[in-house]
Length: 306
Image (cartoon, rainbow, N blue to C red; front, side, top):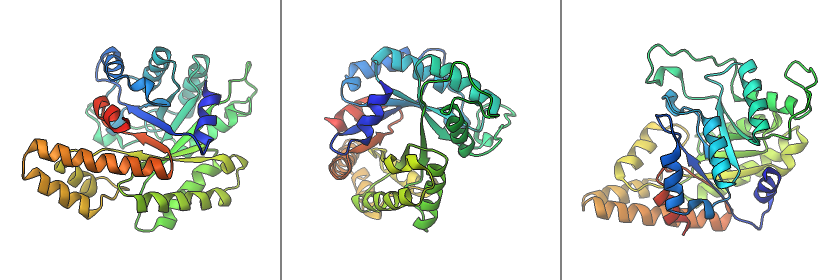
């Protein structure tokens, strides 16, 4: 299943769409699975991803959630693993256990700082940034643990994903960080949301150049997956542009959303969806590899994909 999933990702002629799932603040993900079934989203996408306590807020385990989603829909799931909460022993242990359950796509994240947590006095572990997890996966794929001791049995191949900002004042510095992740073995990079075709094409050009700069042979077949976060409220557009690092929302979109908000919620949602749909369609036509993030608005995902 994962081999086909990654082959599909690398095929330039085929469309590749994944949808992000945020596990619940509770002890069951079943209501989220039912919502996905309601909109038949699992029939429209290549796979899913599960987040790992974003903003250091308590949620159900991303890895365990990913296993359940994968078993429910028979679709590959990319499990996010944050460096914030685990040391290298815990990371290896989780990867080996997940491998036995057939979970083999891992998104390596440094993680949001523990100071944002909703839990009292939480302390981050953070032995290193996400390149440590990529390095661990590189070792496991060679059949050894991080201390180079043979694993018996060796795990099935693990496919490491990483993330990138979609915008920086100095785009060459962003490219340098992408090269570093490719050097550590990342097979695909998922970007922060992109809000115009010009930015998407610039990222794609930077990425193709980054692949030639990497020392790793696997970089030659690495793929860029462009993030999409639909904006259906002016407040969201302004917040993302002002407060979220590494994302740029064009002024024309912000102005159009602010004007729409003056005419009521329905108009705001209509204009926002039309803008989001246009961006989604443009990116799919130009590149065909998209990762949708909607805070579990699976109705919105289904509507965008069509």
